[in-house]
Length: 148
Image (cartoon, rainbow, N blue to C red; front, side, top):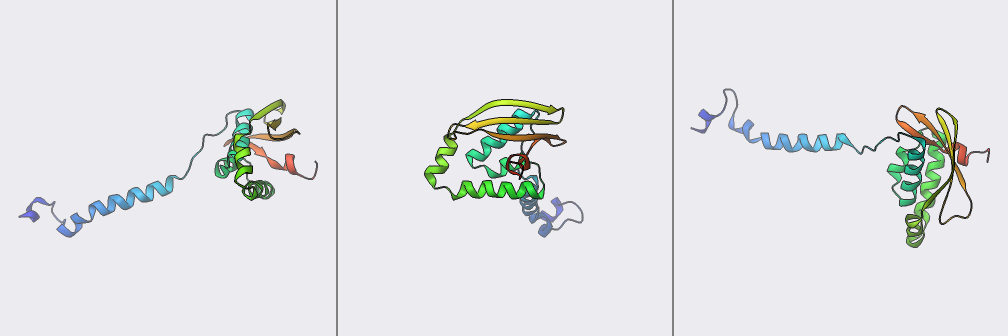
């Protein structure tokens, strides 16, 4: 009698697998979506997002706001290693630090330098931001490269 209720060509065994299919499909789709972050629409937002997320220990999000190239990756690895080498109290101090923007200098329409410091540092730092199709991204080579 139950077989009369099923569409023609569909067996009871096939019908029982439908919930499993939906569970697997939803798991697959959730894995495919990944994390997505809002692209920075201006250099100040890109720089602030990078600094703030690095201070908070949100390394994935900070990485999103960095230009991806091998040299930047190397500098970023050092920054994240330094963060995680701190003890619990040191990381807590970074999370509580505030950011002070001292100066924003537009070099051209696609390049900006941000001079900033955090409340737990006595000296200022500079970040170079470059406009890309994915938003404004930090170029760590400027801040940590051999020119400094």
